[in-house]
Length: 269
Image (cartoon, rainbow, N blue to C red; front, side, top):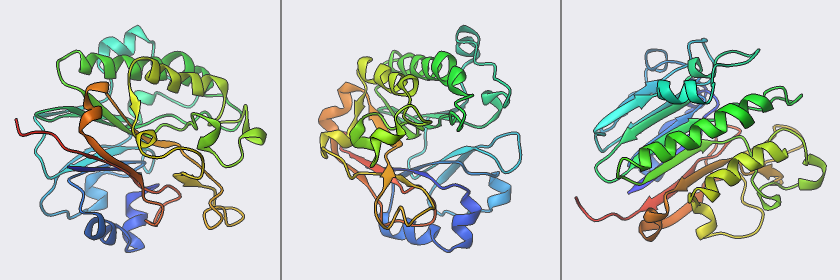
């Protein structure tokens, strides 16, 4: 089973560039998770024969949003955090708004695992959204993943986590230390996932630097591969024996991010 995740930075823009269908034709994903849809299903008018489509757009037009497209019918799909976790972790928003209205988390239950697609709030250039990230969002998301895991099925989550975890995850770590995407607080949020037992799947297959998923539009950054790895697949430990590949698809164009993927081999259930 091939599962892909891609921050498309506007699905309609990728479609206008005629780059969506070539991606589907080339990669043949079984499940596709996307972030930053920047629109609704009706606005996109995406025809994807053979896939069930599940959209969770932001209330604000043209902003954020996640979606999941699957050849395998999920047993259920849940939009957003459960109310108990919103209250427990006080995920009620900040001066930028309420992240629970920004279409940021969608969970789908399949026969053998849970799959979540997530678009983590950006810390902002002035780091003004760090308090939301560090004290509320990241703890709530981890608690949600653990809650689903406790239901008896392993969890696989993917998306734009808006953080480079280690110095190997960005081309220029020293000048970016303490800046958005590479602050101590954001990295601690990722470390908490690891400490809770979730595996960074790419690192099962690739070590070192040079593996990036996002590039600035400036100074030919993508051409020179001066980028950041901020898009991930993390998995429960029990899935590790079944993960046969994890990859970054830097050749797929259409967004300032590229897709990432995992291939899992699970016995029929």
